[in-house]
Length: 87
Length: 402
Image (cartoon, rainbow over all chains, first blue to last red; front, side):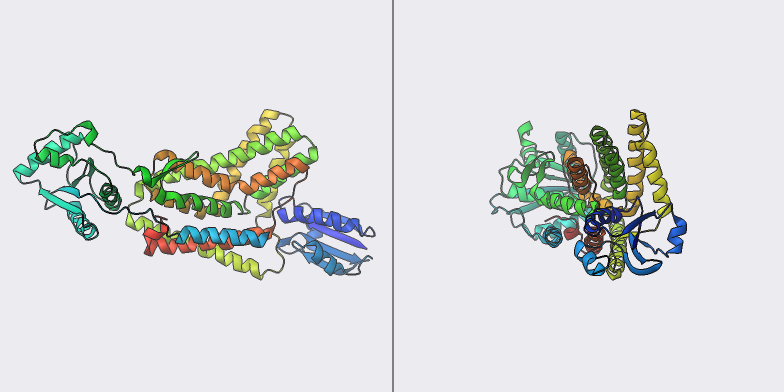
């Protein structure tokens, strides 16, 4: 499974989520991470329909989107939304 | 922790608004004689006469003597009194004890009342009475307008301030902290620290990060000091007070509207508005940090701090302007005005200083949650809207003059 992460250098919430993602995915090593910059990767932003709030994390199973998380999420929320995905 | 912060901020705000602790008014023991020199055709004299009549109803120990100075005897006395005070001004002219007030406006009324309260509890000379009795007042008979020893408190850095102005300190802390959580400029500091942390150069991080914070604080301080001087010169103009009240109210409503809009948003995060402008600033920060020249980097950081905080002012001008306006309604030693502004700026920078300190210790940068920014909008909006309404309808409360 692939995780797409959209952030921007000017976004404090992205900084917060980067450190949470680091801790979260340490426990779930089976994912392939792809990071996009909101300003530099406009094609990907358009393709995945990124809205007006950052950060955005999209989980793909092959090419099928199975989860999209927008904005700040606590570790508990990440656990809850992911459930059994990637276990 | 967040709940605690909310409770502390709201409690402090409410305390600053509704703190009814007043300086204890001493029991009246001295007669206070007020000498009022006026001309019947003078508009300001008429206004003061009306105000004095109103004040007299509240102080049983107050005796008012009036002198119409077109009368030759009164005119001669007026000249002698003015000469004694080394004054050349015209009417209205008011003397209480060893203090003279020239002209009249709302502030004069408050100052006169301050002196009545003070002299009610303090032995004092009556300079005009002495002149009428044919005595020559001595230097020790003259006084300066101010507060009695019991009515002032000596604050570190700020200096002596009247007790009634203490709420300004609390307001500086509360409004400064709320203003500091405004997210407009903080991302620049975070980005700057993140870049510096990646380079792993702690010394450069200290110097450039510290320079950015120092320049940001100086920029904010200078802006507020400049506004204070404008505000002091128009403090007694009623329509300006009302206009500022209306503007503060509108800023407050705007913040509240933003808060409720964000509250509906299920996902707190960064809005991508002005993303291009932010990207441009980010590129500038990168260029500065990666510059080989240390002095170019320092100069660039200072310019960056100035320009970013200029934008910040446009983003959150309501709170610093409002606080400066509140300061202008208090008669303080000039050092105290700047002390209070310094206190405001210190608490405005508090969140930035904390983020910087944590980053310096851990060499990793952490953002400040959008949830805090959301709550700062609510508290900031409430402060501005409430103070705006009070400035228009209840100025005595709004100016934190308790």
